[in-house]
Length: 343
Image 1 (cartoon, rainbow, N blue to C red):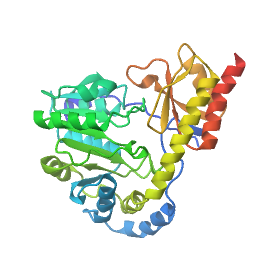
Image 2: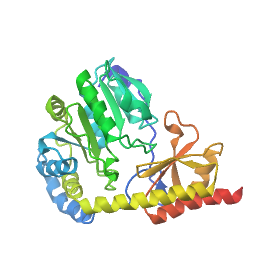
Image 3: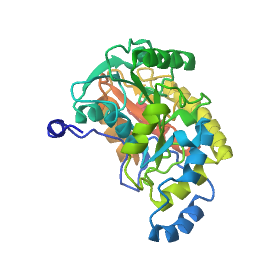
């Protein structure tokens, strides 16, 4: 990390609220966790009296089964963001240029700047077509946050191949890829894939994730990561959750159904409001000439928190709505229906 750059960096706004009395649709996390999670956590507390096994064999085996790679390629991290930081810290020197999509997760540019690098902002739809020559890393988010768009895998592999030819790294943030049936880029020589248990398994407070890479990239990640990056409960719960394939399939089906219902309902609530197509557990809503502040305030008065998406680069009239279960969809649609009724 570049010392001078730290003093110039800012924090990045995120969704999520600590208010437990509201429905939080500002953060894209599963409202459920896999069955048996609590019991695994409680059993692992006894193990927390000792340092965990720094090799994390069970966690790495479980993670490898998700992305179909050798367990040796898995590098445990305390959350997906930690995997992103580790990937950039081992690949970016002061002055390096890094391709960053927009609108997208604000932490990419922040982490690049903390390393003393220069973010080169590219529209997220165009990132798969960039020429990686002369840049240290290209960042892709699959599906992209907040737009929910998922590039074609063939196009992503083509980008990874060009990165390999140019000696450029490709950082693939796959925090939401588990909500789709598209396979991971993990295992490609140019790629560091960053994965998380936060979103799909509904455990943002656990702080468990992992990076996947091969060759020298994997070796750099493994060397640079901190010792005992996962606590014993996080490692045990993570290994348990990563093996729950039936839970994942059920979650995917629920999100597909409720996302369709949310988009259809929003189309009927207000013709000036457009729900953009999404492959993710959230929908970006263009409010057009409607007052976004008033919408956010009205939602909060009704006990629902939406994400102010104007904090994303390039967006000035948008909110993001998380897709959860049927009751959550009903509540979200009530917010927009109530505004229609008042006009």
